[in-house]
Figure 1 (spheres, rainbow, N blue to C red):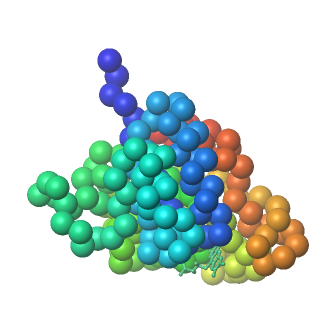
Figure 2 (cartoon, rainbow, N blue to C red):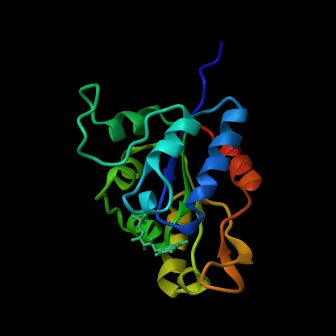
Amino acid sequence: MPRQKEVILGVTGSIAAYKACEIINGLRKRHINVTVVMTKEAQEFITPLALQALSANKVICDLFTPAEHASPAHISLAEKADLVLIAPATANVVAKLACGIADDALTCLALSTRAPVVIACAMNEKMFKHKITSENIARLKKLGYRFVGPKVGHLVCGGRGMGHLADVAEIVKEAIKNLK
Ligand SMILES: Cc1cc2nc3c(=O)[nH]c(=O)nc-3n(C[C@H](O)[C@H](O)[C@H](O)COP(=O)(O)O)c2cc1C
């Protein structure tokens, strides 16, 4: 029997963090094992408990909790991943990835994995259209990172604009397409 595919879902501090629940469901329906790694800020928007219950796997929230095995959790996950999907991805995490900053479990994992990385941004239109964000995205694309969305939609800051998280179905489709 073929090995079950492993997706590491990075969840960051966006108002769209609740959509991670639907993304987990969409991947699990396709028999993909999902392990969630959350930033500290993501936990302001959704609880690790909810994502643990939906993924049926322990959620990694910080770098310094002793791992069950010798290797730290973010390193063993980085090695076993068939894909790292960051959804929703903040402007902050995109900037950190573009600079190689590794100051939490998610960014350490992203830097140490050799699996494909798919990023689904969600942010305010002005943040998305800022030259710095555009340059960060262009740099990551050049390095082989794949992006899905964002799209025009309702924004939490009011009105409609570019920066709304792509549809869950589209994110799940892109993730499956890019599995190692
Ligand atoms: C209510 C609220 C909603 C936010 N939504 C977003 C968002 O959708 N995208 C984004 O880039 N930042 C958003 N932020 C700002 C991030 O939470 C902030 O930049 C944070 O430091 C991101 O941390 P992380 O990238 O480590 O998760 C929001 C902040 C607040 C207070």
